Image (cartoon, rainbow, N blue to C red):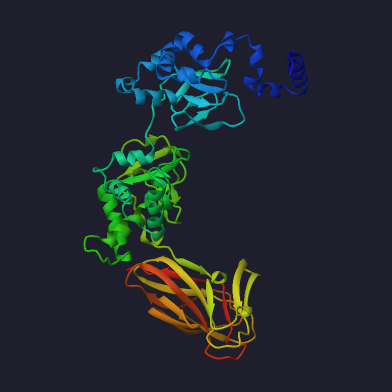
Length: 491
């Protein structure tokens, strides 16, 4: 593009709208601004500039001057000499720490202060991500002057050094031995909550140290949020010991899990997990942004009591931590119902799949999906389901089952833990409970309480069978289900 064309475009833009000129990118106009820095590299420009000369010296000392002399383009956030006087000697005297520190001020590619986004998350050479807000701030440093261009990029002068912050997972590690909740989170590198966690840990060992880091080898980071991830931002409520232990104790009656190893208290381990999994959120909430109520990834809702926050929020490289005296979560909010959708059966017994119809329907409550077994021609046709992570308590069992036939028919439910299929014969064991045959009234669309089951231990239920009537008369042996709902009863 020639200089004449650039000028012509500017004239045309000014005719169309003055606002368009105000939104132009200074990087596109750098040829015409008369800046003598355009003939030298970023490293040279920063070293030659009086107010950033100290940072320029560190570029040379760490070898970043050679990086900033290449043909690629960069953005540098350069602290003033006054700001550099704030840097700890622990950093300045440690070559590795110093290199990380300097790299935390440099990003590959150019970031002007004039851009369409109000905020941009930038990956620095330190592998940390910093938030660049227009021409105002980078992380917690204010921009003194913006958009100084050199031959291979742009630099902004800032009033504070961008000292590396720990991320949330590093902060949790720093609390080891002084925080019961932190100790538990770290222990999940050794203890697997789910079988898939054990498999992942084996895979990590097989593929070598560092494979997916803690995100694969720690059950919390794998299943809840990877608080070791620098790219995303999170909020964590880290409870002090008394409040944390109180919440864990509330869960213990509902997470009774016998262990074959006398040295392992499985009830305590799972009570802790089901407590802490609701304390992390996939968004950074500043103090003035904290809503009155938060809902966790697992649907658990609790009120945010700011009076329980201890000290100031802890700002970290990938989010924020609030130290809490306690986070009081009501059991009615913690122990959520388990809903099993009728159309999501994993198998069927005693008949042909040709009798099964998966439907999308609509009634006064809205659109729903359900399953219908029509004219199976056999007695005791079964649709089979599973339920995961049930608590050690009594459950009220509800169903919504829409009978669009002209006659009433009955269906029952069996809850079992194990089954085998040998020579086409199904053998069921570990019977947990049964719901007796219950009439499905014609065109009744409300939820119906059909019975109860009681679990002596927290567990999965691998075989929940919706069973048709024990006769082969079509019309009387139908099955239908919108959903089952298992509602835990508080002890």
